[in-house]
Amino acid sequence: MDKASLIGCILGFLACGWVAFRASHGHFEIFYSEKGLVMVFGGTLSVLFMAMPMDKLKSVPGYIKRFMFERGLSPAETVKLMNTLSDKARRDGILALEAEIEKIKDPFLVAGLKMAVDGTDEATIEQTLRFEVMAMQDRHKAGKKFFDLIKLYGPGYGLVATLIGQIGMFGNLGGDIEILGGMLAVAVVATMYGTVLANAVAGPMGDKLALRSSEEILSKEMMLQGILSIQAGDNPRATQEKMLAFIPQTIRSSLRAA
Image (cartoon, rainbow, N blue to C red; front, side, top):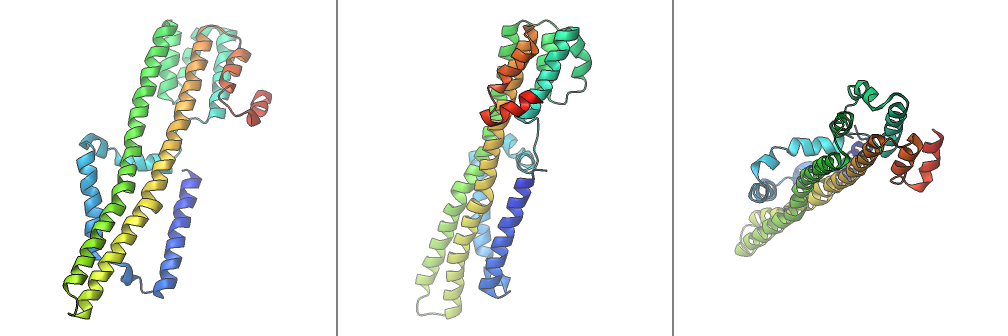
């Protein structure tokens, strides 16, 4: 599990809960509005169905899992693994990597190494793996789009509920004070629902997915360059230097030493 995501969720929940407790003196029911919930969450859900195809919506559990759990190798782990594979291929021949492929869990790296071991030409390997990266980027964009839609339209539907509540207030001016209070509660609480949904849930999750996507794309590009270098029979040090070009200067020396 990604500790940063878990800590962020807990801190956000505690901050909102503490402020709500202090403001309501423990009477949390004042923050509940059935009309506001229906408008904000129902309206946002309707937008998601209108804006995204069903196959993308079925992947929502995967988007959430991607937010909470790290997947794949970090750049540093990628450098170490590719350096090991390069050293073995240089010492024992590229066919010796067949035994190592079975131990690797990353499907992208496995596919590239199998093509290299089978003697596929460099251009075909690069083209095939770049198609894989393009497809991966498209999947990642769908996840980011899902949360961007919530971030955009959640507050919008909160505003709609606010306007409805205000119209209800104006329509009952001079009438029952309880009705006026109920309409005011709808107006204010619905705005709160939309704001919390956008800024405490959808916004951070979408940004984390975008960061994860860029990290994974970087890792895949490193793997691609490493595979092509191994196939070309480059010296393991040359293979390592090619991948270190993707790593920040501050941690290159430690990886070289390792």
